[in-house]
Length: 323
Image (tube, rainbow, N blue to C red; front, side, top):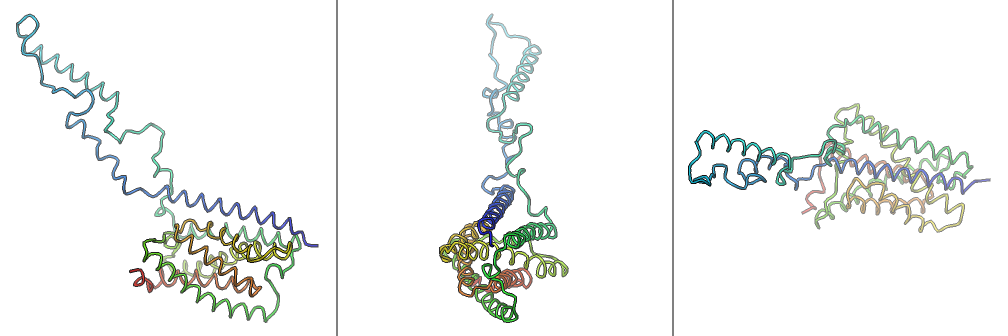
C-alpha cells in the first residue's frame, strides 16, 4: 500500500533544502559583486590631511602671536621649536581621533561586504558543473529512493515502461522543447524591451571552454538537472498529491510553479517570472500527457539550446527584438 504522506513529507524536505541552497548561493554571488555606485573607498584617504581641513588642523600652522604677553618677542629658535611640538601633538590627536572624511579606516577583523561574497571569476567551470551535478543528482536519488520505499505507483509519477511511452515521450518532448525554447527567448526579449533585463551570469558561469567540458555539460549535467527538476516539481509535487489525495492538479501546478520560480533566483527578477511561467507550461504538459518523459525531454532541450545557441555558437537571434 502506498505511503503517500511519507513520500510527500520527504518531498517537502528536499524542496526546502533546495530552496535554502539556492538562496544561499544567490546571496553569496550577490554579496561578492561590488557596487559600482560606491566607487573606490580609498579616494578620500589623503584629502583631509593634504588640505588641512581635518580635526586638529582647523588653524593655519604658521599662525603665531606677533608678541608675547610681556610685550617682547620670543627668540625665533624657541618659537619654532614650540610650534613644531604643537604641530606634532595636533597631528597625533588627529590620527588618534580619526578623520571622519577618511572612509578607508576599517575596524580590525571586520570584512567589507565584497570580502564576504564569492567572486564568480575565482570559480572554475568544472568545479561549478561538478557541484551542480552532485547536489541535484543526490536530491534525485533521495526522491527515487523515497518513491521506491513508499511504494508510490509509477503512474502517479508519470512513468510507464513501454515502447509506446518512450516513443511518444521523445517525440512530443522534442517538439515541446523547441517551441518552449523559442517562447522563452521571446519572453526574455520582450522583458528587456520594456526595461527589465535578465541576468545571464549563471549560464555564462556554467559555459564550458573545451570540447570535453561541452560533452560533460550536454550529456551529464543538463540531463541530471532536467530529470531532477521535473521529477520534483512535476511528478512529486503534482502527480503524487493528485493521485494520493485527489487534489486538483491545476491548483498543485500553481504552487509547484511558484516554487520552481523561487528556485531560480539567480536569474534575477525577470528570470524568476519567466521561469515561473515556463514551469506552469511544463506542468500543464505533464497534466495533459501524464508523461514525465515528455517534460524531462522538453526541459533538457530548453537548457541545451540556450547553452549551444548563446554560448557555443554565439548567436543572439532575439536581440533585435529587445529594441
